[in-house]
Length: 504
Image (cartoon, rainbow, N blue to C red; front, top):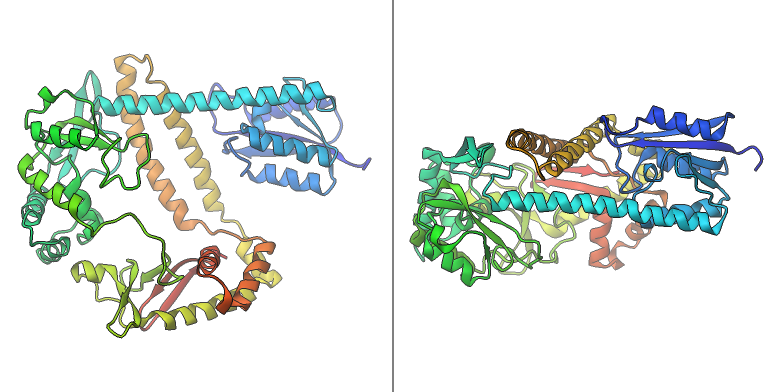
């Protein structure tokens, strides 16, 4: 125990002028230690809101191994901003007889008063964080209510162009003639009581219509377009419809002149299905012009409200591969189909939507489940070996770099939105443009990280999964789904091929 070392922990979310660098934090801590050997743990590009930080986790492992006697930080919030995480950390330190020192706040964890003061400080650190989050949220809702375009994908049927609103540069939706013609056709066709979503997707796909990224029209995309008030020429009938549904309407009834479209935001309250239950949602008149007459829009919207085709997502019950199984040709989900004799097959949803995929062929669900189960057994046997485990646990440096950049982008967005309060017109113009750019970059980073992420499982989980696979016939349906979720990202299948993307 006498050979234990002192440890310095430093963390910085992003480089910015008003934050202290990791190097400066370490210098402060070394002064506190007054010389002597110490080990440095540095987490750059990580938030303090949780403990998912590589060097922090390494510090915890070294403490558990009996290597550390004292942990020194520049300031309390460098190591934790969460009351729960901090309480667990202090219990952990006490268990292994590790002292904790904040070099600027001068806390002594060997006394009850020192521990109490630490808890008080962490309460205020979390309060500060939650206050910032609330200001960001309020600023976002304020911009929504003023009719600003809040980033995200441009709706089909429109393009964007620069626009000045209340002295602030933003973007405005402008009708894109070719796409708008298809949208009008969707509404006109769906207004016929005998026409279904499937009929429309099949017809427009055959006519050469493509949506985002050149994809054929799907029923899901079509239903989103048909219920989106961004297309409607909003008049008093639209106002009365949303008012009767319990929607919060920001503008006065007199503003609904039958010209402009509307922005529609999910409210702060939760609903079981925001597409059918409109209470608590928010409707705001937008600066752009709509192009679907209100009578036609309402006819389609009410038909969708009465439709039972799209219901809240149900719990999977037909196969434990649900959510993982995709068509090997197009990548769309496979869904369960039962023939008259009761045998269960898998069919490509894109094929069912609009015939634009050749389909997955004849796949009997039970036969595919048997093959996937054997592949899981084989994969876990490989993972149990030392070589296999090291290979699975090997970190991807690209993910770490992307996560650092994502943290930087999040911080910049938060800082810019927070600066809206009391800002002048010049600053507002700059902020609006920058937020749109940063949001686009954020979505790109999230998508890239999702592609690269490979989740590792612990040795304990390996043992547990092995037990489940050994008694697979007796394992419950829900437990089977959990095992599959731990092991597999996707299962791409046709009647002739099988490609499993593993998490381990």
